Image 1 (cartoon, rainbow, N blue to C red):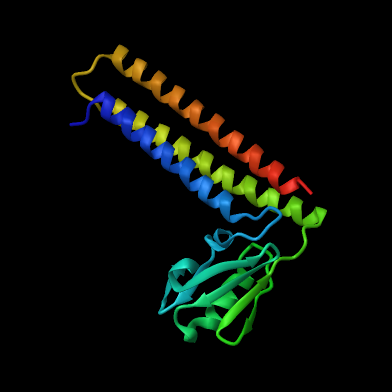
Image 2: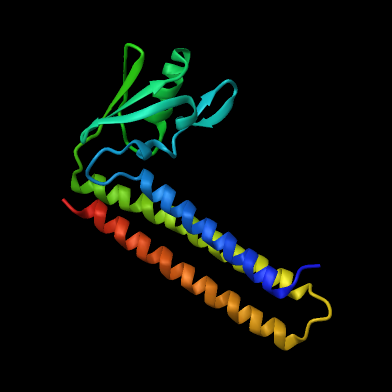
Length: 184
């Protein structure tokens, strides 16, 4: 049987995870310069399953305008190149020898706007995660026995307050990322 503090703590933890996830996703959206974690969201079909790019290759950034992807298994070169090309990052990788060069297109106004849309979609996923944690907490509170209605109401207020704090935090992350993308 869970207690009110445990339910509230679990909800907070779930909301923190949603924020962390959004931060990681935002980090994969590039602003002006190349960063190896830009490819963190790329999934590659290898060995009959979807794997994160960083599990099948190392990614480095030799200069601000490009990335170099080095597969751990050279046999996966084509699959990795295809996954990068088909990701929603708008990149055009090219295999050279045993590695993949990924030149970064210069950021024009349209590209920036497209990236802002992607970031807004990722932020919405974060909002959904935060709301889901709140709803889940409320459901658990309603199922509690031997707890007064007042205690449940106070706990629901706490949940709402935590929810609002996390939403505010997510909004400021979104604004910062948007500004970073739009900065020329």
